[in-house]
Length: 304
Image (cartoon, rainbow, N blue to C red; front, side):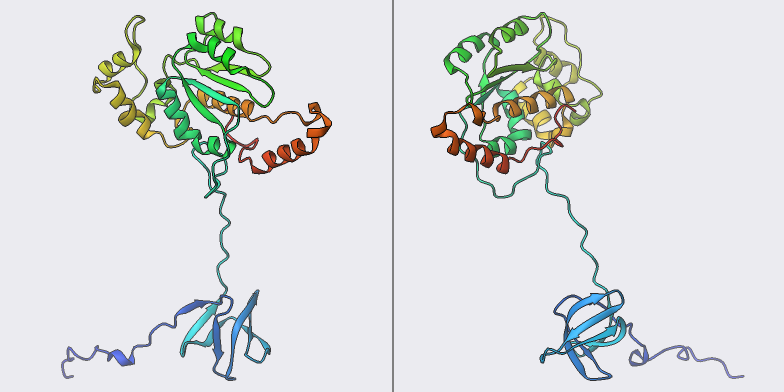
């Protein structure tokens, strides 16, 4: 028997059958049935049948599968994939994100937060909500200033004041001042942390826990020293802490619930029933508009 040639198993490229491509029967796709010569656009798919409509308006149904041409080439028609419904986009606070929405004209109500870092954190996580709701956040430079701020602001219906205080614990000076100024249209709430830094979960900044700093030592400076961070607390806050916060899930629940509570408090519309008859119609329209445009819902992370 003669030896086999090394060329015996070679196949000419033109003799190799190429697989027929699969094409989804999307609406308006022009398809030809070569066996009948019928050419039409896909109008619908029902189970395993595709319906084609030609230029004369005639509709024919064909079983999905091989035997069709598209752009002069054989194809296998298959059912189009159903689009997976996408959940509505969420803002950093977990509320519904309204793309392209313009900021609402600022309300008369205000939220004060104690310190620049607090204000920056609230803006980063709740900024979208605040712009949609028309709520302005201002820094409170010390809880001792609170009585004068409340007195000058003169809270009232439709002009509510909310305040977020650091380290608000029972029996403290902060709690006594908070009790003095809290009323029907002024609300003071707080978190238990020594500083707003602690409201960021330790895992977010890559540490197992926030270090304990003895009373009498500056807390921020003591934290930086014990963690081996830079001694510039402004830099540490901006680069090591705030920059790593992405959403409300990066924060401790004790802060999340209080901020949500304040936003809800200052965005309560004036009671339409308490207004006189001449303003009833416009007030009703105002209340309806506020309800329709709000992005906040009971499913937001309040009180988590």
